[in-house]
Length: 237
Image (cartoon, rainbow, N blue to C red; front, side, top):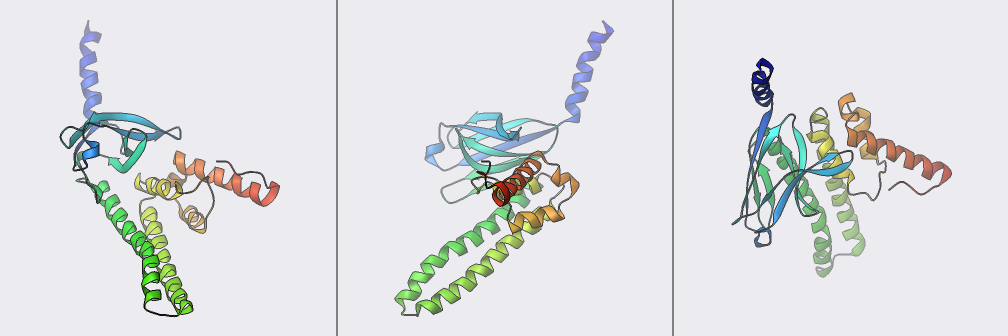
């Protein structure tokens, strides 16, 4: 009988040791209304659902216990909408036709400050093609245009590389480092080694290198590199 009485106390103690996350979201995108949203996180190199809710009149809500801070993604069906750090506190998500923003907690604030800056640089790079058309209309020599825009593109690319490197390096030992590493490597068809990735791994801490995604990506990228340089086999996808 005493053992049975102790069980509720033990369960309450375990629950008190876990943090909780609370996500309050709003959306002005009409297509989302009535949809089901999912919070998914990587497990065994696959995204697994950890929570779900419906969007009702432009509002949605997730809440749950959290034994450790986790990098997750907000999904609608099989489409990833945006990254979210699940951490203790009140997390706010705002979605409209112009941007998606997560805030309210330290890591989410830090992540979206980085994403905003990264988006600014991406927009600057995309704007170069429009700038090229304008310069042609102004009668500027094509060689001069190419020389100027090539220099601007190189400058923007370096700023982007530096931004990513600084952010990951300053977050090697928390979920943001591996999370952003996953974001920048997901653009490739299969794991490859780039100068930026080699630079990151040369400076990485043991904790960063042991992250399951980072470890698997880097190992597979090295194997692919060896195949392409040696046997010439098709890279792993």
